[in-house]
Amino acid sequence: MASAVLKGGAGRIRRSLVTLTFIGPALLGLAIFLIYPLIAAIYFSFTRFDMFNPPVWVGLDFWKYVLFDDPTVRIAAKNTLVFVVLMVPARMVGALLTAMLLNAMKRSRSIYRTLFYLPALAPPVTATIAFVLLLKPGTGPVNTLLAKLGIEGPGWFNDPNWAKASLTLLALWGVGDLMIIFVAALLDVPQDLYEAASLDGANRWQKFRFVTLPTISPVLLFATITGVIGTLNYFTQAAVAGSVASGQVTSGSGIAGTFGYPENSTLTYPMRLYSIGFSNNLFGAANVMAVILFVVSMGATLILLRRFKAFTGGGR
Image (cartoon, rainbow, N blue to C red; front, side, top):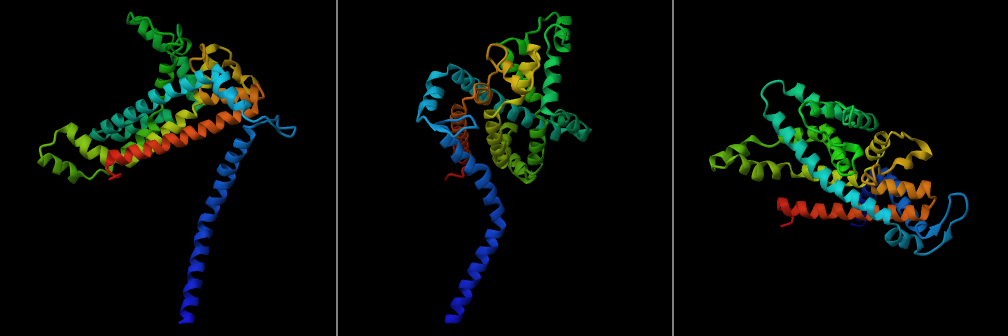
């Protein structure tokens, strides 16, 4: 009996060691690249430091500065929220409609899938420069074509009233990566579910609402969460578009000079974080913004998980 107990205990220990061997690298990466930077950011948010001298404890000074004293932070946060509201639904709807259209095609389906996916293969900087030049007021081919039709084209990236919409169009232009994921998800929807719905007299909208959407809901959840987190960290395209549209292409330490062009209409939260940290040398304030961004991203993810459970009936 005692021998059996010892053997059982040794088996459990061996299984635990095997489990730790497999998940050990992931736990180590999580500790090094997430937990330690997060704890360090929280600590440095209460200090004044310049990366060369020891940090000096200043308490809540930088939290007060970010939350109440810097109006540009509020502008950047508002712009980022607008981008989340505009870009995430636009990319989701655009990618899903394109995927459904391509799946419904009988001929040349592969060719059109490739054509729609091509813009997503371009590097973000290159794609942004090309798109800005495409919409350039006066000399851009889009406004030239509109002028021939008797329509006065807008200022696009040079007009603060159109700058956000222009960046949303840029996001839609590169929707091919998300479209491919939706194409694969739609192909996995069992056809017998559609046949059963047809026998029950369901129309196209009812099949889409009660068959397609619930079946691909895990993919929708993935696309929504990654879309929201990606847009909360929106930086490269907005920075490059502002720089090119302003005609003052900068790089390195001078890149922050064109952030938000025109009139702070494209200034995003990560861009302001970068400016505060590397242009104003307020690394404590930059860490405050980083901690807030992490909390908002985590909160948005948890809310979306709960809402999708309710949508698919998983919470019952």
